[in-house]
Picture 1 (tube, rainbow, N blue to C red):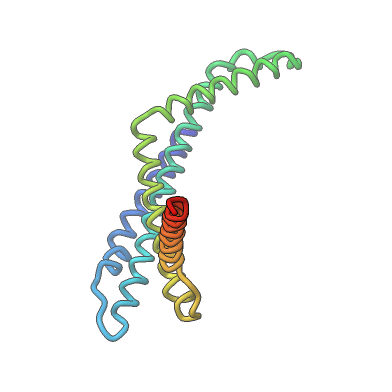
Picture 2 (cartoon, rainbow, N blue to C red; picture 1 turned 135 degrees about the horizontal axis):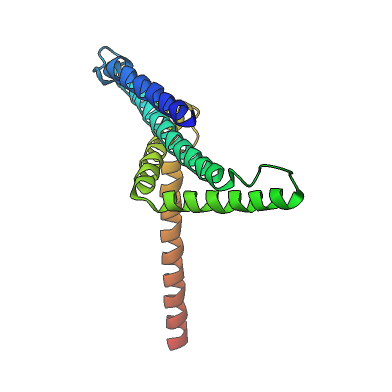
Length: 182
């Protein structure tokens, strides 16, 4: 029964993703026209970035749910006969230890798989794209109009400050050397 629920969840997610790509996904790819073309393109890029992040998150969640269900199945197999009859604190302790060990092993196996690494890499990539987009939109729509410094401007100032400190340090040491020579 659990397997059919998992399959139906995955099937629903796949149908949602295909529907999105066939409908709204096509709209996002359309070129913008008119005086607000650049702004429209940026907004559509943001929508696409969010949809990619959401899809990757759902995919990761679905994969973790499958691993969780597999671990649960293994625990049920190991403890099918142990929990029958009179229940004692020792039986609960044994069940708990089996549960912890089985889940740890199952998730450890999954975390070592290439699929997990690729899945996590894709999710992190989309998350970084989404964060970059949000930072750009924050700078463009809020910080610049309010005449507040952006991250890029602060980074440039820090770079220049570092360079000036380095130059001052070098000049100070040269002055000290010249004074000592006299």
